[in-house]
Image: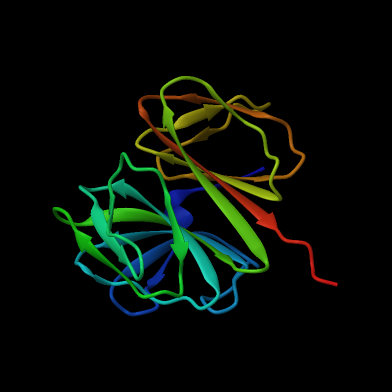
Length: 195
């Protein structure tokens, strides 16, 4: 189990230069935008416009704060995403653009390399104790809007936007929220190599 503090996240420019992204975690460690297996990040979207294209990447987007966006993905009807919406999965290499509904937003972006990794993003309301079983190769837990206390030997805690990385086979984790908020549980699965 590793705790990642929001203050230590790496801030870098978007691939298309249109803004900045805050990288929460990436694999392999230190990988760039062209050679990661998976990447979890947050972006501040200040203006409507086109998304960066990522060849061979599947991505899932969630709105963390702000009024939301209308996402226009080629070949699909426009999708309205707000802080109350379920995470939206789409291919990272089809033309996509976003229109802000009412001012800037912050989003959560999970990306995996197609054919190598799969991911699933679950959005949970956080008001009572919750449990997480780390069944995936890697599970990342992100707190939004409140912190949580972990029922561990040292009673660690996460503040808002801190993240927790769990490896498969670890003990079930119990979290007690400090207030009302959201919990994003990201499961990352490596696909078996083709023989």
